[in-house]
Length: 221
Image (cartoon, helix red, strand yellow):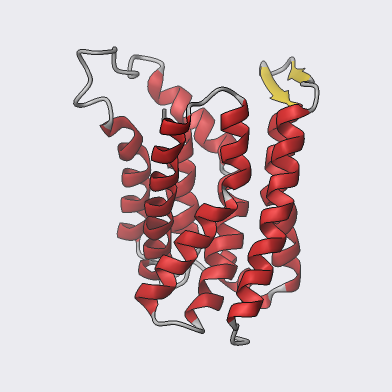
């Protein structure tokens, strides 16, 4: 693996952030076009497609040009316990917010919760979580780890991923999400980046547990 330097790190960060910000702004201000697939009743909005392109395009490029990235993406070295833990944490973390607030608003689980979770999980499996993990865990983290020891490399990788989410934060702000809520989102993103990198390491540099964790987290409310 080629060893990175700080100039290469910052250049990569600038490029992927510019791509993400471009598509996030486009998704925020462009007219919304919704296409519904009659067979399954699935609706796809143009803003969602533009947001996906911000991670899809860099992810595909890295998957094509980087042998190390392909190796991490298709490597299946993690133990069954790591996969199960990734899924459990991914689904449990969003639901845990309801435990202390069950009297303030009703919990989201009912008879349709499980089928909905499975459906949304499968839809998300090949969307943003996969491509984000390819960029930040399969490619970015190992490069940073070639410069730094494991602990600081995890922190730098989590910071890089959090900064990259500026486009998504712009989209949320444009959609009416308050700044105070966005600050909480930033903190959650950073610690989420640490968790994802940790699972990448526990999975012996296999990306699959990170994708499962990320997908489960996004599929949960």
